[in-house]
Length: 108
Image (cartoon, rainbow, N blue to C red; front, side, top):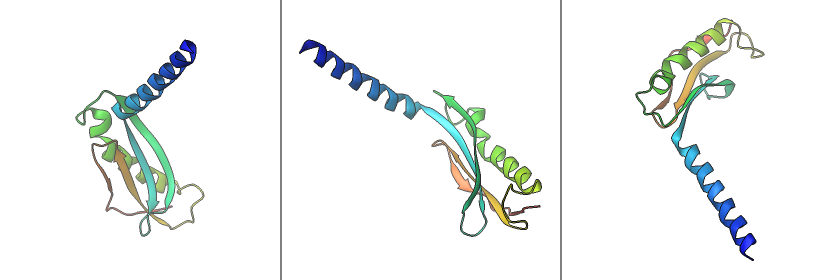
């Protein structure tokens, strides 16, 4: 009986610490999306940090890094996307900001 209680208690602690650690890790996500309906063409995980604030370079530079990634992606043809498609960047800096770019890039 005591062993079962200990296992249940330990499992609960592990699950709650996983949720806690997930809440303090920030990640910069980036997507190249269509310029009209924001259908995703490609996505990247650019950077992440644990216990960091929004002033940390990994988060503060997320939008610019994403814009650069999508611009390069468009210049190299956007993978298997139809040539001439238009794309914009969409970023999420882990609670520090998110948005969709206004500059439209044509897939080469």
